[in-house]
Image 1 (cartoon, rainbow, N blue to C red):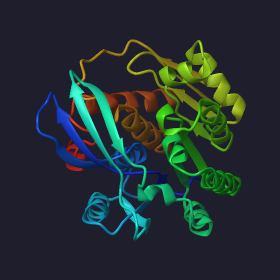
Image 2: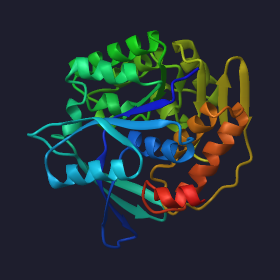
Image 3: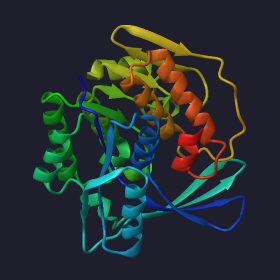
Image 4: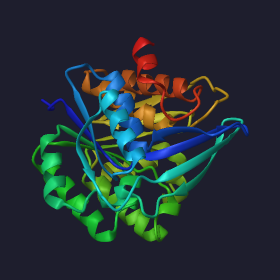
Length: 305
């Protein structure tokens, strides 16, 4: 039985989003925070969802903490760096497609794995650990090795580990390191949630099946290959489910689509749904998210809807 505690680990940033040249709107988002957000909305109340990151002492950090807390996301594993502050990114949207500009070189979240004892203790308290390729990419090589070591130890102790590779080449020093670390992380994960377009470009996968097989060979017992609204493939414990024929939508904003899929899929799986039903839950929520500006649909709207 999984302990009903989901710990998401990564970087939340200050988000400034503009739609078709309109004024920028301030918010908070980041791939792992987005997934925690949607998992919190979809999971039963007896689950605890918390976020592990590092913030500063500036007003935006204080506001971010209050934002987490006010929306049911635990902050007990957020540490403070007195010398740094959160990263910032701008989104410009044209007909639903995104262009990002980042300022994150000195982001406090880069130090989230500096304290091995605190990191290990937080992981040991969790039933499920969720992280992404971005989580790993922002860390120094030593911190990255420390993170993966703690993760492997938590998995060996019975924690379920979930990994979205979320491949972002601009965050890595070189492609070989990116590929190597991605597969090292996969080898320490129970569930992998790759996106086919990124994987095909990075690893040369020719099909959804090839992508799923590669992560399965690395040691992931469950693999879901997302596909940007196209056919999806999931493989788990000898079962293979392919989801075809989804209705194509003209998105308002695709930010957070894959993250929301992850949150709803995981919540459904942890609540006892079949693999197919969990895929459909993820797809259904991501369809809602792409018709909404910004990465996060307000929690009240999610729970009412």
